[in-house]
Image 1: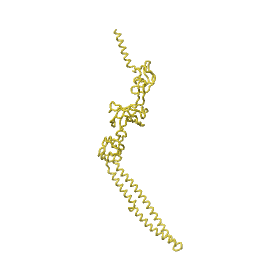
Image 2: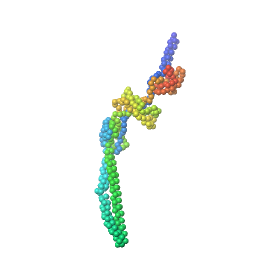
Image 3: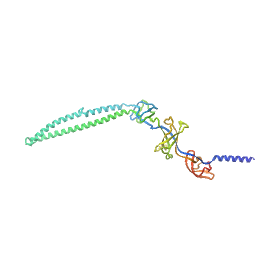
Image 4: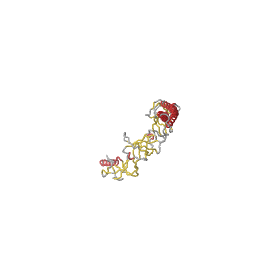
Length: 359
């Protein structure tokens, strides 16, 4: 009797043991996805730099302020550009005076031209009078040639002065244009001592306080959209080939524990980050949370495939990736979709095939 009790107990335990390690494939809806960590950032986020060096005079906004495009954010002090602008203005005024003839440069040449015209006129009269006389064989040949040479020299001298006037006037005109360009550049440089916003958005960070030195190499502020946020994800290079635009994304944020948000892939960056061997993916919310902050983190699953009523088994029952243990021994199967827990069975076993968990 005692032996019979032990035998019954043995069969009960053996049966329970086998039931725990033996299952039947089940049909279920299966979704395959790619896992990724998540960081939330404002859309159009950028860092604002000064294009001139100086001392920070005032931060005209505060962190969290909503701003319009071209709004002045930061005022910088530097007296050098103002002095340069003043000097450029003086140079421009002098160039304009010289060009307009108010200074002695062109006036002196004009006076020389007036005198040269009088001399040319006088020498011309003398030459043509002497030429007429010489044609009548009156006077000497030396006197005629002397008058002719004097006339030609006067003509050449007048032409040289006129050319000098024209070239000097062109040079002065060019000097005016150059001085004007330098002055306009100097004025623009004085305007560069403010940093303005490139977008309608929000001030997310200010990096310097009044009195600190400003360089062109350090950011002064961080600006981004006040209402639109993007979901930054990093995807392994093994999975990137499965990702395409407009795929659904399921998002879980640490700040919203237990809540699920939906999104869609909006951008795939084609360059791999060699440091961590990942690709950057961006997605946008379909139903964003009411409150979002830059840097919020979480995790996401990018849906790459869905199937309904497919035959599945737990992945822990797989042997070497494509085999299972059945009553007939080790059996090869063909697999399809998979997620973290289950894998689709395309062929090799049926829903009535009992499979055993490998030891």
